[in-house]
Figure 1: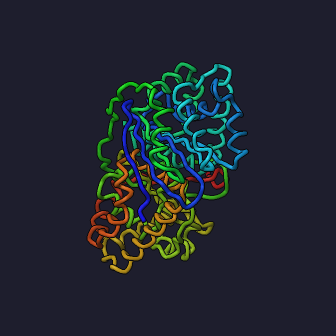
Figure 2: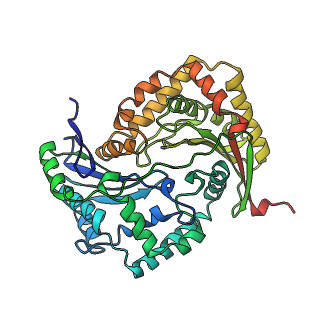
Figure 3: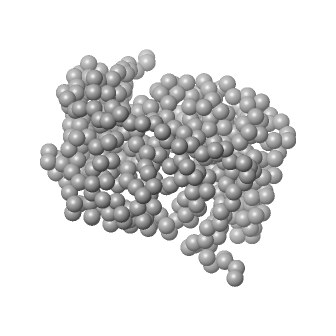
Length: 429
C-alpha cells in the first residue's frame, strides 16, 4: 500500500510536505530553509552556518538547555546542518511528542535571539571549528579547489566561511541574515511518520499559520563562465600522507546529465550517497579506479563525490597516494583509466552493475522514517519531490552511449581542477 502523502502551501508561503508511515510509533520533522553558502556575499561568508548555531541558543519560550533535556528524556534526537544551498533542522521523536517539534520550529522561526554575549561566545565556537578543519588535509585541499573552480559564484567559499569574515561579522549582520531568509516563504516543512494527515494539518496551521511571510528573495546568483583550461593547485599542510583530488565541473541536479554522471560515478569509483543522513552502503571494490589503483597499489583509496546542488557544482575523485608512489603517478594512473572509458566501449554489463549499485545505495538512504522525511524536503532545495520519485527511473534509462557522451563532455582536462596535498614533512627544499 502506498503511504498517503499531502503537499500544499499555507497562505503565508510555507510549503508543507506530509507522508504517513505507520510502521513505527515515531514522527520525523524537518524544516528546510533555502539558504546556505550560495546566498552569502564576500565579507559575510559562513554567516548561514553561524545563524544555525544561534538557533540552538534558546528563546523566551524555550530557554537554552530546555529542549535538550526534554528531547533526550523521551529518547528523541535533534540536530541541524548548513550546506551550499540550504539549512535544515530536524527532530525524530516518539509520535505522541510530535507537537513539541512544531512548537519549537515555529518559535525559532520568529523569536531567535541574538544576545550580544551569546554571539561572542558562538564566534569563538565557529572560529574553533574552522581552525579544527584547518588540521584536516581534505578540508584544506577541497577549499583550495573550490576557490580555483569558481570565481563569481558563491560556491567559491566553504560553508564554514573565511576566518577573517568570522572575526568581522556582527550581531546585526546575523540578525539581518536571519530576518531575510528564515521565514515561511523560504521554507519547506517536511514530516513523515505515524500520524493522520488531517490532524497534522490542523496542528501545522495552529503553529505556523499566523507567522508573516518575509521579503521576496532575488535570484541573481552569478554563474561562472565555462572553464577552458585545466587548473592546478598545491596545498602544503600537516600530516604524513599525500592526497590527490580531481574536481570536474558538473551539472546541477535538475539537469538530465546528472543521472548519467551518477552512473559514470558508480562505474569509476562506486556510487556517491546523496543523503548525508543515510544509512547502509555498497562496496566500491568492483569500480574501475578501485581495481586499477587500489588493488594495483598505486593509491590507498579511491572514491568519488557527486552532490545534488541547485547550480552546477563539482564531481570530485579523491585519491590517497600510496607511500611508494607520487601524486603525479597517481594522477597519470587515474587518467589512464578515464582514457579507457573514452576510447573503449563500456559494456552493458558494466552499466547494469553500476546502475544496480547506485539504486541500492539510494534504497539504503531511503529506508527509514527519518530518511523518508529527509527526502520530502531535501529535493525542494534543488528541484521538486518528483525528482526523488523518478530517480530510479532516470537511472534505469541511462545507456552506454549516455555514459560515453557524459565522459567525453565532462571528464576532460580543460574542465577540471587538479589538487595535490603535500605534507610538510615531505616538502623538498
